[in-house]
Image (cartoon, rainbow, N blue to C red; front, side, top):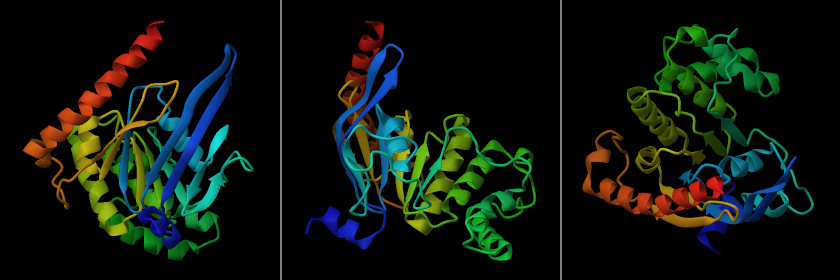
Length: 282
């Protein structure tokens, strides 16, 4: 049995994207967002997805989450089909949780209430049980002391951290991150990178992370996947990030190996970015 199938059998968040197509119906006619894309993500991996704008990164994430259908191929989680020929749209579930670019916290609830909300609504825990778990997870994420503040009363970095902790409250198999730190300043982003890795080391959830920030991709990931420019979206490069863990994400950027990886991946990305730009100008 292959390593991927062994991980799938273990039921810990292995994703298989198999020849996936996605066509949108636009006013101007059909738009091919993804074409014949295949990718395996082992359980417990931080996989960063990079590529030019419009290459289908968010489309793939939304298909895994169950936000929209696919028009061809199939996506599997731990060997079970999420979506495919017989079921074009995956059923959303607590095993796959998304953290978006824009915050989704309830501003009228405290941070603690936001984190505890999911398991209570789903009937998995009583309010007291959920709040006890939430306090422990928030403390582990460096959020002790802000439990009873409202989201608007804490920094943008803390709000992002609250959202990630809330996403992990249901013990998901997969955490789907769509450029969650894009709007943060560089210093806050660096702090959030450290916080995300600390949370990851404690939970070892599979992470599917979309970013346009190549330094972020290398600093955080086990593997960086470069997607091609459309219309035929496919992985055109997969780079194993062999930097030691645990990582100091600020210091690791100064190492020769980081600089070498950055140059190698940027060279692959640059060709696709130029191709996408040329297509947009046509």
